[in-house]
Length: 140
Length: 385
Image (cartoon, rainbow over all chains, first blue to last red; front, top):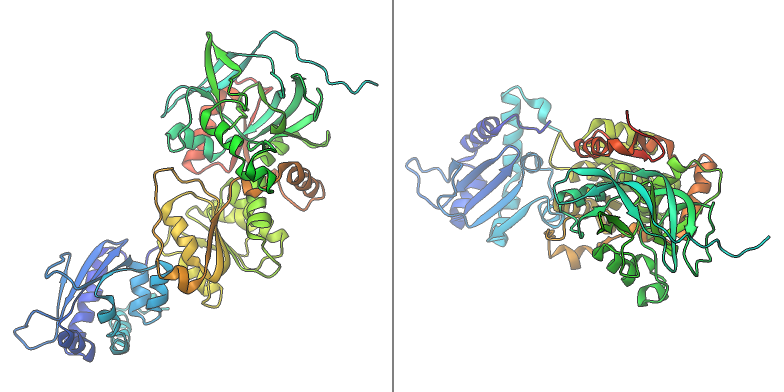
């Protein structure tokens, strides 16, 4: 079976991750780059926009929205949701995955790839989210 | 004893045949007229025909060929009559059909690639024999040939080069499968890829041809052999044919990651796509390592395109190629494959998921479409209830 039971399951996990990550260095990098990054997942079908451009009321560095492509993303990564799961665990070699066709990217890819070094703390947060939900068995 | 071929009688004969009148079907078993073989042609009494996905593609219209046509391109039988000038076979000889009968004269035949023969391809797309004529008639109306074989009939007329003589003691219901599925899968491994001992192999699609890719990879000494399919029963069969690992593609759309995990993160040395869909072709390309080779065996519809990461072409130096009939030389490969079968090294028996009479041809196609069947063999001499 796919890692995520359904779209709601995936959204809950990413929402929890975003909540933990909105003051993170990665989010700060997104804000400083003024980037809007979209992840378009299939199976289950979920679109998530991580917006580092639009100012927030509480001073956090990003806003996360589901099932919309607003504001228009600077870069879009499209993949099976299972590949997204591999990515959020920090186990995906993104340039290699692009070359293999596991991930399709459009837009300001070079700007987005510059943020990769900031992501490892997010990978750890993702693992913590799953463990906190009692879903540590999904981790590989 | 004279060695002169026996000439064919001059009058047509009546045979039952599976005729596709229009895209979408149904296939109808009709009693049709079969004209005598012309110069360079032979008439074969068909013993058995396999139901292949390419026949199903014709029914769906995804493999466009002229209709109405008598289907079938994988089979075996006994030569019954020969036309003028035929020297390679004689009546009474057992043969397997070859659906890419090289002309021996075109650029590709002369340069050692009879699988790409121009005349054979023209014959396939025109629905005729190499002479440009057809030999089947129904109420005076010509019926097209399929791939120059049309062996879903009690008898058929084919070009002389469209038959390969085989030893008389091989069961024709097994030999029939060598006409396409086995030779294509075997050739893809042996001729197109040239798999070496110890090479890692991924096979996407474990139907009739895919299982033969797997067993040919086993014969070549490949390891691991990773079978990928959406059906657990096909994966179980793949294990029997030599797969060392299986990936259930119904569980995840991402079939590349499991291949990476089984190949030290590198990707497979070779991947074989045996489905004929753009997504699986792209996945096969993605599943091979840098410098590896992806071989497309499956036949996609002519209008479909595949998206490949452009940067990977120079930076990863992979080979993406295809294979038509396994790049085989049937005159050499068919006897070789049958020798492996007789020696117990290559399994033909396990490929047959059912045997039906010609009247049940529609059910055989349904079984293939549903994924239940690997290979259903139509036994021609048998009448349905």
